[in-house]
Length: 328
View 1 (cartoon, rainbow, N blue to C red):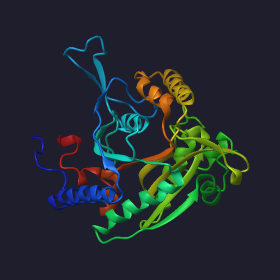
View 2: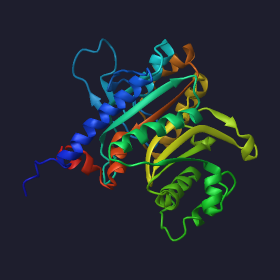
View 3: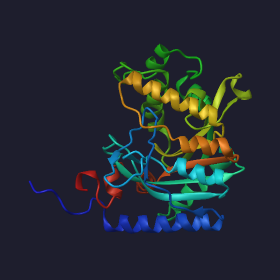
View 4: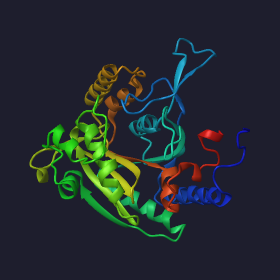
């Protein structure tokens, strides 16, 4: 059978994407946030055990630098280097790449919007991220109301479990009749499965839900604080933004401690070794930038393809791509 050469998305959707990109750029121009471009290939990859980077082999002159480069999974590290150098509020709208992620809602290459605001925390950034999504929805004559909820309160309210104290067996039991192979899964895996299988499907279609202050074990590149309203349990200062059941964005009050970030990278490598998977090199330039001084800031990454899917009510990422992975 001859492969289909035609676009996966309709022309009206591709024109909507162009309008969305223009609206995003106008949104940030109104707020004096500058668009930048950073490298797509890097000497370092993403160490997150749940994200895989594509390696590339460079054949030209390197003057002793590594020949292996990595396609970015996010522009986060170079954007933070710009912030540490004193550039100021900035954003990037561009392609990112993740190995092993292909399916109904995933494409190995996709479009990400990432931006940073100096002097802001994650709670303030929630409002701006929601305003951007609401501006996007206006392009298709839709509206959505923002609701904020604490992560721990959400699990207590909807599932009657305490994510900070319920043991692994209790978390597994809360999945009910959803059958999951438990081999190799840890506590945060069970919490994630409860989010994707029990909580997200219930989120109302026309509601923007910001889930705030995650468990400290899911901090990634976010700061950790002791939450007074959560019985003294440490939490990660991060949020995730959902439109209906689709996760759109992940934001942090950014960690600025180079020593702590280095420790987290080492922990990532240890977990990768335990899982029997390779690890890309640590981004030492990011650590040097943090050591030089990252200003207090908050940042968020938003998936543009997911946003388009949510705008149109589609469950297939192919519906919003000119050519999805099967037709690339």
